Image (cartoon, rainbow, N blue to C red; front, side, top):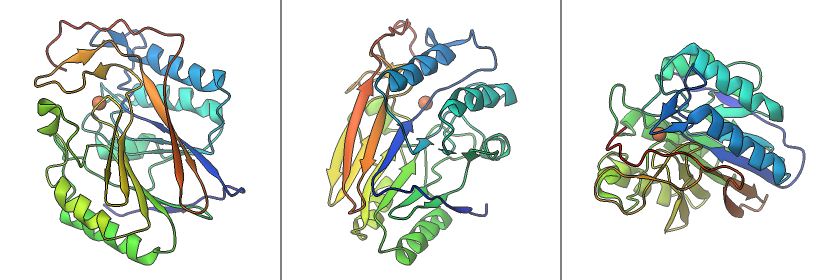
Length: 274
Ligand SMILES: [Fe+2]
């Protein structure tokens, strides 16, 4: 698949990025995942962002946007995220079909461009989706593209976004369905000192691991959470959340990770899979 590059003018030295992931939306706004109404919990997240007066310059959503693969679920997503009137960059998770995601989310403010360049930063949306599979992989073409972007823009601090986790998060069942060749990706990123962060979703929990100069960081899902350090599948009653990255023009990133204040998800903890 051809890669798309886009340029974005932020207009100030510091940039605020809102990172959301795994909304698992349905066409039917009453539908639930593990007991949680995913439309409702995304709304609660957006209200929490408003309540804290957070004004992102752009939004990145790292996959699992649709749970039922319907055009209506993506339309719901567009309707909810349009409120910011800011660019929204999306990539595919294991619960999305990449061609459909590109078809539905390439309109006006919504983009599926893989390379985003601002005045001070480069952001790369790396595909880890393997059609029909739950685990991830970054194939050789994808790695070659990544290397080319990093070589061509070695003067720009860079953030890499992907769906699956390239590094283990300490839950045995989840660590079997991360990026299969994650080690190869980590080794590549560690050769480029301009890479500041690799941020991802899929694990429905927050985590942060430093390797060489790169901050590997996950974001909570906007719906149901998975229990940390669990051997087998296990949902958690934790609240949905989101990450904010304050990106300075000198390449420094200040991270804030939030959970919603005024919402309690009705998680069905008895379900043993999803
Ligand atoms: Fe997910």
